Image (cartoon, rainbow, N blue to C red; front, side, top):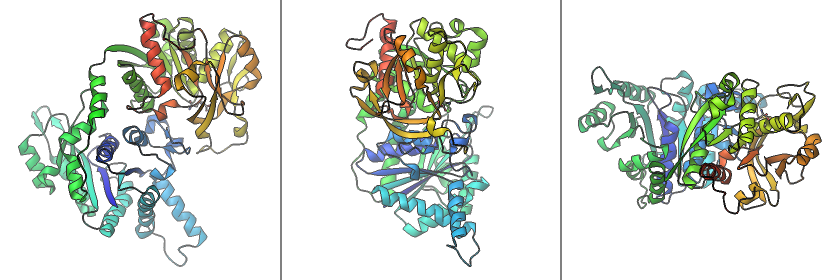
Amino acid sequence: MKYIFVTGGVVSSLGKGLTAASLGTLLENRGLKIALQKFDPYLNLDPGTMSPFQHGEVYVLDDGAETDLDLGHYERFTSTKLTRFNNLTSGQVYQTVLDKERRGDYLGKTVQVIPHVTDEIQKRIRELSQVSNVDVVITEIGGTTGDIEGLPFLEAIREFALDVGIGNVVFLHVTYVPFIKAAGELKTKPTQQSVAKLREIGITPHILVCRCEQPLNKELRQKISLFCNVPYEGVIEETDVEHSIYEVPLMLQRERMDDLVCRLLHLQVPPADMSHWQDIIRKLIAPAHRVRIGVVGKYVELNDAYKSVYEAVIHGGIANDCGVTIEKIEAEEIEKEGAEKILGGLGGILVPGGFGERGIEGKILAARYAREANVPYLGLCLGMQIATIEYARNVLGLTGAHSTEFDEASPHPVIALLDEQRNVARKGGTMRLGSQPCQLTVGSRAAHLYGAFLIHERHRHRYEFNNAYRQQFEDAGFRFSGTSPDGNLVELIEIPGHPFYLASQFHPEFQSKPNRPHPLFKGFIAAVHHHLHHKPISGMPR
Ligand code: GLN
């Protein structure tokens, strides 16, 4: 078994997760079986209780684990299936250690960071390699070297490396080489200092992935190699990608990073065949068509908050040879300026998931505009609930219709708390989470797009369509195109006759990949493109 540890230095947001995922892609394409995991040094048990402003998107796995968004990169870039064992936080480590202490597992001993906390961390690396039967485990350590809270993780991987021995471990450090405009120079000092911090702990990186805005020349590579004690070929350049994050694996392959990793780990495997990735990039760089999609949310200034949604929209574009321009629209702007002014001219409108009242009326205005102006609409989770509220108010004439999440006293609670949620008081990990089956309606647009009648999609919600209103909606032409297999829970809705008006209670964005675009996103972008050119899509039910 071989192990790669990915750490980060100088600043956060360097794209460690992308680098780890891209290395995963390359190794997989060399015929290796890999596993990816992320360690997060914060004390929350998972990111599920954090605001997107703090942490970006919460990525949901099949098993219902609420995880770090880097796990989204892992799933999109590789074929690994992830579970809750692939994301470990300090909170989880301490919880396990403290449970053991109370049980008496350490009876007589003082419980300490070293060895009890560090042992628990190492156990999670070993467990993953055992359950997943792989050749290489890639473990990414969140945070930045120098963070106090990250120390136990670094100590744990240092000890771990000692245990598994030379030739079985690679330490890869992602660092920043800033370009100082006034000097007109790339500066290596922050990298030197961050590597020094690692060496202080006892870790000497084998590979330095240098994030830089300008290419590194030979002299700089030599300088970094010398001052950081890393072999020359271990200094890898990772400049900002020009078009898409999916270029990163190709960039790292050009730098021969995977060759070096295989050499360091004594893995004799053929080079990676990346021709299918090259095809994807070609489609991204020079698409035959272009569409503009508005994503109406409330964390729009933060690129990471709707990460999987943006990616899935781009995948839908790849499937249709369409470049997608995503307009990030603040829902409250629509409340102030009106839908026509903000949304006019867009090819399609998407309302993603969300919580809390801010911006809700703006989203309802967006759904109304899409319905009335025949603009393709895709709603995800909250986006489905919004579409339902809008239809209730403006088509069924149910004044004051709302979700009880936002108005408990609504005379028409068309969206209400799930039955299973009635007695739930604790906030962490208690929503309806993870993969659930969904039965699609014969003749629906959804069934046509999926080409199937039974699907499985991931969830994260507490509220649902209120069945007391089902008949009324149906009589008014609303179509329930997907429900839980027992028929009880509405999972998908659509408006027949509209160019494309479809919304799901689940989150399809979590299962879309660049090489396997999700059917709903593929259908949405197809509809946007065809609608712009006034062409119906052949075979698609209306
Ligand atoms: N707030 C809504 C609910 O809990 C929608 C959740 C979401 O969009 N993920 O049901």
